[in-house]
Length: 417
Image (cartoon, rainbow, N blue to C red; front, side, top):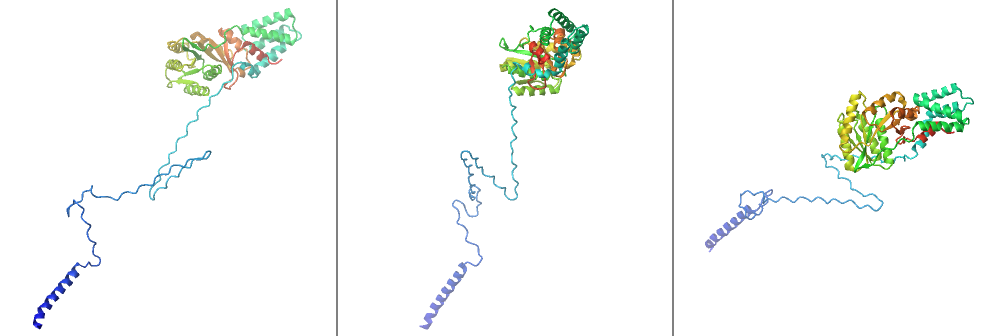
């Protein structure tokens, strides 16, 4: 019996030993790696995984930017401040929009009606010669030859001119002898009549402007440099705008760099357009383009500032002649205004004669009349050139250019009673 149990115990012992061994083999040790992930379907073991199968973690969505809160009426909108840069990064440059250039303010020129009357005080120097000087001489108790000689000297010193002075004095002597006038009021009336007559009030002093045959009138402005030509051109534009005209300016004085800039400044103040060309360019081409611009823009007047060089008569004639021929391809020139400096006196007349010989001058613009005691230059200019004075400059202000009126001018020369 005992011999029969021995084999059974041996078998049981072997089974226990095999079970213990299997248990120890399958038990994970400390620090062992976790079991491999479950194999993805469609991929054999040991095969490389294609990139399209690899799934990366989804990127975090940035938080939506908050729209600026709507401002309540009367309160500024709240704009969120930009996020600060990450460590190690530089902040992006802040773009600052350049400031918009300020648009020039359009001015309203003073009305031209009665402008000469308003500026009569500017003729104070000439008033001393005519008002105080001549009236004082004529008011003497006894007007002998010496007194009349002094009257002549006063008129000549005022640049009235020798021939015009001789005629004026002769008429005054005759009328005072016949009428026997001696009161200051009578003498003043006589002097007013003679000076006004010497200025020939019947002359046409209007500016020929407006649309002609569907095209704008063209005004050429000529004269030597230094007479205030470009400045006068800008002031003439203001006179035209004040009278209800529309204007385009042509900067045909291409030989003086500052002329175009100066003219553009004047134009911007009244809302007019300027046509200009390259420095040293062809003045006739600028004049042509200015008239074309005036036609396209539908304005009624084109004002052209020409070069003021006076090197020789032939060169001047060629230049002005070319400008006129080119402009007349669009239509006839309505006016040619000659700018003269009143302070130049009789010396300026020789320059004026050259321009009248080479150009069909229709009117004179006499500048700086407030800076001289020689107000009689107006009479001398008209007598010497046979051309009416149409505008006079009585100051440096933008609206100090006045349409010329003989009666108002003589009244201003003689001053208050």
